[in-house]
Length: 208
Picture 1: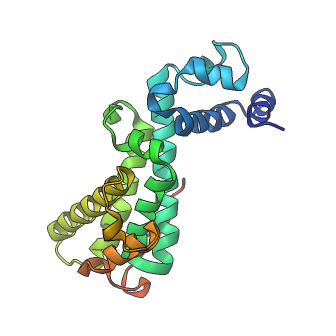
Picture 2 (picture 1 turned 45 degrees about the vertical axis):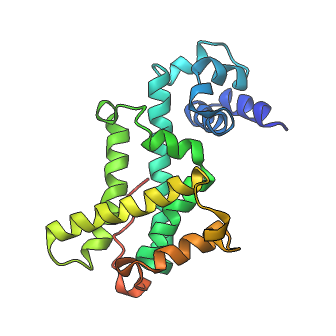
C-alpha cells in the first residue's frame, strides 16, 4: 500500500489528527517548509481541501504542531543517548537529529514560528533545553555557571549541526570519517562533554 493510500485510510478510520501530522511531516521533509500548506496536505491525504482545517486552524498551527513534535523527538533521542554516553551522547543525538530531519530542524530553529503564541510548542522547546541544563547542572555547582554552560553547549552542537547541514565542513577536516564519527571526535575534545555516562546525572524523562 502506498504512503498516500495508507495515510488516507488512517485519516478515515479515526486516527485523524495523528495521520494528518504524519503526512505533514513527510511533506515537510520532501517539499521543505515553503512547500507545506494545508492544501498540499489535503492533496496528499486525498481528502477535501477543507478537511485539514478540522485539526489545524491555519498553516502556522500545523507548523507549530510539527515543531512541537520535533522537540519531543529530540528530547527522547537525547535522553536515550545520555543514558549510554552522557553529555557527549546528548550532543551527538542533537546533531544526528538535525542531519536526519533537516527540514524539521530548520522549522524548529529557523524563526518562522512565533513560539510565544503556541503554548504546546513553547513547553516542548523549554523542556528540551531544561534537559540539557539539568544534565550540566550535575557538573557545574554554581547555578549561573550551569546556565552559561548549557548555552555554550547548545551553541556548540547547534553550530556544528548547521555547518554540516550547510556542507561547510571540508573533506580535509572530515579526514575520511563519517559525519557521526566526526561529531563524536569533535565533541570529545570539549572538556565538559568528555565525561562518561556515570559522571552525568540524567534527569528523568518527562512525558512526551
